[in-house]
Length: 75
Image (cartoon, rainbow, N blue to C red):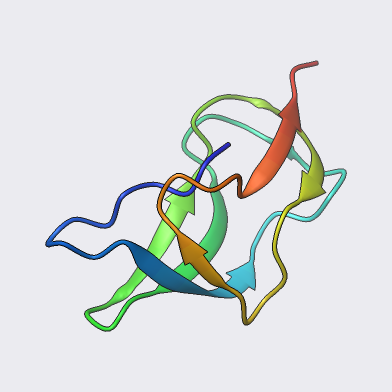
């Protein structure tokens, strides 16, 4: 799954928390991570259901829109 766009010409955000860990099963709409822009904190939700197989960034990393954030296997 990819980092979403943040709107208002913001194209990057700081990863502040992983809510879902590698190995967790998530449903579409579950909060996976929390990011922070200079405007606000935003929850990133799963776009589909499955099991998280990998995180592509660590807390404290600056994320850019469109980058891979995590990997999800459908089960």
